[in-house]
Length: 599
Image 1 (cartoon, one colour):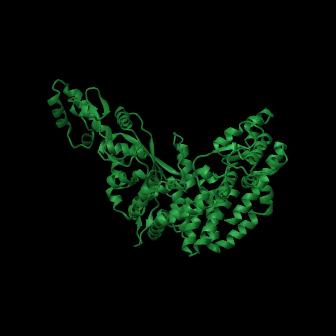
Image 2: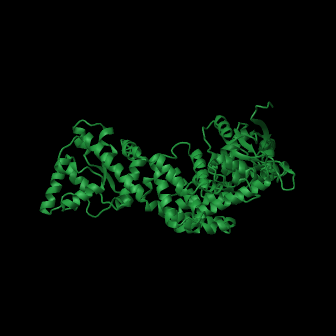
Image 3: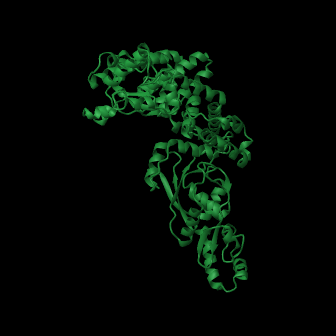
């Protein structure tokens, strides 16, 4: 093999592959992913092997050899990064091993074989009662029953079957484990980017694995330092955060994990229904890693979990052990009930009362990293809350983690370590939140028809934070409308603007949007603003509310201010739509500025 070759490709007998799995030379993470294949797909795999059809390649990434504490070298194992479903299917059907299904239940998949038709089928009660079917091929393929005994037993219940036919088909069935499967073994010294590129090019299904997938594979395959259990903790926590009702499933179906401290630490999730921050395993990994190691690139976590010494470029068991211990601490701090709930409370206290205001996870993840770092520095709680709120909103407004988030995480975490956070925040505010940003950049970012734009979401959060009322509402707040799925409506009605010739990108500008009660919006209909606002002023004179519940002109003006709507619209009558949008953007930006510095 040439020095430029980045992997080796070999064909191996299935029985060899299964022996490697059994001995641990190939590590299949227990729940790298649950076994999601339908039993019929396992049946089809057995049939393909029986017919001699190719079943594709599996891909493994070899662990680097590690120097142990006594100075000796431990040969690296192969970590399966693609083909888990096929290998699990092989062990289930041919070895009889139980699998963990998508509900995290351990189940046994039995594949039956009909010697007369040479057909495979998933075992069912009818097959188990049938004389023609062998209900489980596993003991046969494993050689627990010899060929002659197998023929004799079958002919006892099927005496008319030709013996030579049985000998031929049973020999073919026994030879399943002699079939070959391709193994692509990636070199141990490859970095994650190269492994990812190779994986994408080889994988014909177009599946893309993230760096977090590789990290999870490595963690789950490590039993020496408890990585396999740690991987379960990550999996289960993220699943429970979304589906608290899953708690009894873990307790009843995974007794070993239910006895761990991890399970006790996540027990609080069984009664938790808040969905503001439902972390994925990627989010959990990033937060735990960066908060503990002050690094942002997950490829470095793979290296650390492999025991890499960045100075000598060798791999040492002591570094591997310490890295697993540090990551474990990070995961435990992430899932700690007090930490998690206080962090979510801080984000909500900034006005982000509903998940739809948070469209990107990176700002949330780094805000949690910051929170976990600050509580270790004994920073006073009020300061921690203010710092986290401001950094989160700053990240949203500036798109700080919109591109190359790993690099930014790495840069920011190191900067936070190097100086008091208050000083770091001041320097970032001075450079990125200048007067030009507030007066020009921020209003410009509101020139959009995307209602999910981060800047518009920050504006809505500022309203929720200030307990502002919805447009023309006397009592109903924007926060309540956000939480209870209220509706967003046009200040200048869409139908009215369309009649004036405005295109969709114009009449759907976010500066034309407000949160408004549905009944108020229905009353407005397609009337131009000068018409329905004249009627609003009239209701303040008559005391008969038609639009919302406000019958006091001063309260209407206050409502305009709360919703950052130009007072000209109320006091001077018609104005050009473009002038209205420009004026409202400036008011929205000013409101966001006041809100930010109040956090």
